[in-house]
Structure formats: structure tokens, C-alpha cells
Length: 438
Image (cartoon, rainbow, N blue to C red; front, top):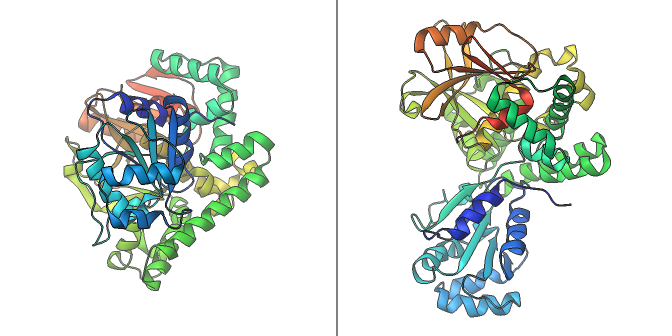
């Protein structure tokens, strides 16, 4: 089945750009990089020359001899059985992180063969380029990070194209979605929480409507992630720390204060012990880390507290699987989920904002009594965003933030329908994808 991915818009722009360089698409395993690239290639080029460094055992040896395009292109044409021509063939290097020389060759494709269209994909490229011997072609490549499917992509995969149009229209006009559609969209949102955005899990859900099968897909992906932690780290102690850190994200998010606490990983744990594990997980795109902004001044990155941060998993479906949360639990938000549903909802909102290209931060007052879940730079303004898992209308934190910093407006994400009141823009949980840079 075909699944629309937003990266296709970027890829079309990349192809047409007169400043085009070889493109690297990175992201965690199973987020759909290869699928998106090959679908793009089929539609936009006469042919695709595809090379996978994981499945083609002798491919790397070709790059060991010579990485000049004039040398490589005839060989690659022969290996792929495709005639590679300028502008008409898409050359795809998959799992490129497994071949350092192939990554370096992108520099020469940029300098010596700019008319050839090259896309490379790497699941753990962020890990690979941190190795001491890895020569990354700085300034000679374009880069794009792919994430799991966001809510909009999920709705489109579910055949809800008209609903997406109406959601976007209501967001722009601050007008409520009709009640029946609002309830339908909330139901789809809860399905997305459980299913997540990993394309295989979404496809399995669409095909079977069976959450048990979806959970099997998610657990398989989790096991693959854990295996990669062993494969791409040399120290057994670092492997153990990385796995422990990854497995405790759900526990961290179950706390009323979702600030990351090392003691939750292990009693007496310190930052010095686990900071490498966190960096590894961030580089592998398995988690995202957001810092507290000490001062609400642009650029926020200059005013962060590096010791005060939150960690979110890359996918809510994997988060539910990690916590063994059933679909029924999420649909009805059982009492047992009281401590977890806030963190789950916050995790979901962070994913949607990240997919829309935002770098997120959070804010807490000096007493620690009020907190703003996210601060983003939207249309040149710093906008506070509060996230609620239910219909809560209280806005104590937003009110204090507004009093202190006087933002242009605030955003509250909850189960409430669209609206704008008291300088607060109400955005339903299913519509977070609408918050994007115009």
C-alpha cells in the first residue's frame, strides 16, 4: 500500500534546486527512509540505481579502490544493471554508514559530478560520524532527518483526506470543527497514540485493525533497536547503560514532574555515568532531549540549562509498547494511567512539533510551581504551548507566563475544540501538526 510522506515535498524541491548537492537522509531504523526515496525515484526519474551496503557484501570494496565519480559510475552502472545518466537516474546508497569511503565519495560527487543525482540513507549515521576515523563531507551534502509518521500522515494513510482539510481550515480560522467530526478525530488521535508512526505498524493496523499484531511489530522494532545498541558500541558497560536509559524513558514520563532524573535509571546514578548513553540515543534518533530555557530571550539556545532537561521517545507506539499499555487503556484513559497519560500526551506533542521542524524548549518558574511544556519560535515570535491530556480549562501556568513575558499569544493543546479566547489559541490534540512554520 502507498503511504504519503511529507519528505516527498522536500525531495521534489531538492531535485529542482540549482544548488542541489548529494543528499543524506538520516533517521532511526524503520521510519520509512528507503520506501520514501524509492517511491520518489520511481515517480521522478527514468530509472533508479539502488545500492545497499548491508545486503551487498562486496559493494564496499568497490569504494576502497577509488572514490572518484569517473571511476565509480561505470562500475555502479554494471553492478546495478542500470544505465546511469545525468539528471535522469537517481543513485541511491542505502545504509551508507557501513561504508566510510562511500560517505567520503559524496564530496567528489558534489565537486566533480554535480549533474548526477545522489541520495544516501543512513539509520545510525549520527553514531558513525562521531567515530574518530570517519571523514564526513562537511559543506558538500544536503541533509534531511526523517521521523516516524506524524498525525497528518497517519490520517492520510487512514483515508481521511477530507478530515485533514477541515482540520487545517478550522485551525486557521479558530473555528470549532463540527462536534461529530471532532469526536471522530479524537478517536483517530487515540488510535495514533497506540499505533504510533512507524510505517510497518501503521500498515499492519490499516490491514488488520488488530492491535495485538501492531504490538508484535512494535516489539520487534524495539528488539532491533536494542540489538543495534550492542552492534554499534564497543564497551559492554556502555551497552548496558544505553539500554537501561532507553528502557526507563517510559518511567521518567510517568512522573508528575517529567524532568529527567538519573536516579530513576539506577539508585545513585550520576550524570557523568550516563551522559554518553543519552548522547548515543539522541544521535541514533531514538530519543529527543529538550532543555529548560532559563531566560525567554531569542535565541533560546543561548539561555538553556544543560542540566535540566526532559527526554521523549521517538514514537508513542513504541512508548506504549515499552510500558505494555493496551489500546483499551488509552481509549478510555483508565485510572491506572493517571500518572502516565500526561507524559504520553506530552511525548506525542513533542513528536508532532519536531516533525514540523521546531526546536522545542520548556520553561519553569523559580518556585517550580508553574511550567510551560513547550516554547517554540513561531513566525519570529516566542510562543508558549501548554499540553493537557483532557478537557482541562485552567491556565495558571500560561497566565503567569503571559504576565511575565507578554507573548503575542499562547497555545493550549487539549481535547477542547478549536477556538481563541483570552489570547489563548485552543488546538485539539489531533491538530498539533497544524502548528508549523509558514
